[in-house]
Amino acid sequence: MKNSKLLFIISIISIVACAQKHKSIVIAEDPTTIDYTTEVVVPKLDIPWGFVFLPDGALLITEKAGELIHFKDGVKTNIDGLPEVYLRGQGGLMDIELHPNYIENGWLYLTHSSADGEGEGGNTALIRAQLSGSKLTSVERLYKAEQNTKRGQHFGSRIEFDADGYLYFSIGDRGNRDVNPQNLTRDCGKIYRINADGSIPNDNPFLEFPDAKTAIYSYGHRNPQGMVRHPDTGQIWVHEHGPRGGDEINRIKKGGNFGWPLISYGINYSGTSFTKDTNLPGMEQPLFYWVPSIAPSGMAFITSDMYPDWKNNLLVGSLKFEYIERLVIKNNTVIKREKLLEGMGRVRNVRQGPDGYIYTAIESVGIVKIIPNNNK
Amino acid sequence: MKLFSFIILLIAINLTLICNYSNNSSYETTQNKVLKESIKRGNAVYSDFCINCHLPNGEGVQNIYPPLANSDYLRANRRKSIKGLKYGLKGEITVNGLQYNKYMPPMGLSANEISDVMNYTNHSWGNKYGKIVTTEEVTKITR
Image (cartoon, rainbow over all chains, first blue to last red; front, side, top):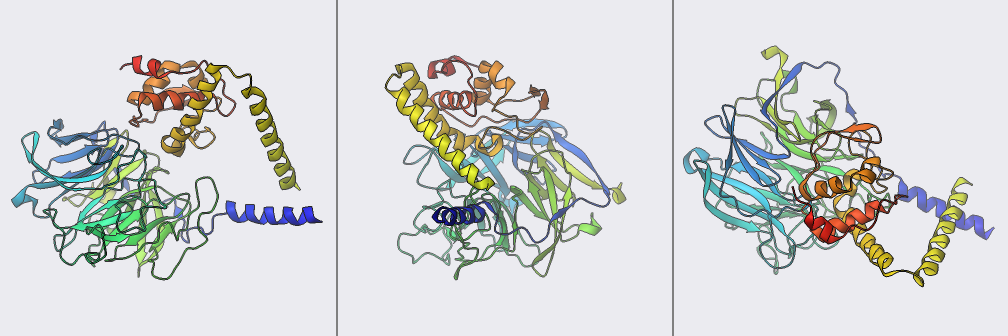
């Protein structure tokens, strides 16, 4: 009798521990018709982490292994003058973004992992520089996260500007979820906001908090690798990798606590649970969560008129399932998910180009353009 | 009932492991001890850098991430495997009769870490592949 009771308890624990708490409310569908073709515009790239379009039509592409590639008229040129990249695990040379006023000031922003500073290992750094011929000049470091670590995970690293010219960037929890994300005096597990010259805005939320990292804008994040300004509201949206299940889309709020790891829709990789809570007072809820995880990377809103059926939709790359997800959002609710470009490879990034076309960076393939059939 | 037998099985496995360990340890050769320590460190490296793609039991994902457990490629390609960990692995390979063509980037591991994780994968999940990989062996392998 005692035995069967024990067995019962063990069974319950096992069931609770192994089951995902929640599944995504909307599932990803196969498209009913495929009304587009694809064209590889920049071939032969390994891990194209970030890319931007220069005013003259050239592309600048970051390779995770530490190369910055300039591509124009079919010619690739390696750009010199990068700071030393600490290549470790998921770290390397990561995102790239242009200053909103790039045409006048020429500032480029890049994130990379760096071994500088105290302690073994490395952490995420943000720099700005200008492009002069095939060389970076005026390289300035604007931020370097402290507490180096040899862990290979969660460097974050997406960069985005808002309409007022503030620069936002992400740093993941660096594989130390129980220490970093909820502690405002430590880096990692945060979204940061700084001025374009690296100074701290005088209305950042934690200026008065004792010993806080004053660049922090929101906290309680796991590993945000997608960041985009909403075309209408101007709000910064991110998505972040969850553990097993529990990837999220979040709308960034000044001073907001997004709950990692105290609340989550995911479980440990091993199948065990680390929190029973998906919602706690004072913590923000995601706009959407993915269970199972898609491993999201890169994020773009379609604002151009090139794709009439997709206008205002959100695109998100999936590293795990190797497709682009098209999310239809109505009244801040995801009402449809559809798979695009399935099977081409791990999607690292997706952007809308200045010409209105959607471009995506696919590992081992390159930069791929999506061409709607009605435009051909 | 299935669960019950499963738990019994787990306990049995644990007991076997514990017994084996204490049995062996008293007669253990130095070489074995070094290998065991390396495997232990290699487990930590694996959990940090490899587990996402090759999965906890080294099974990989069919046609995407090649298996390391019971893998004819790993068994037969010691040098290539070390080189892949050091400098990355690109191009098509055949593992257990299936084609794999994903780029494995270098993870930035030290020679120590590479020897440890090689020893872990060579001696886990039923694998018994070759003698101990040493740091010197890793250091000597170049592009």
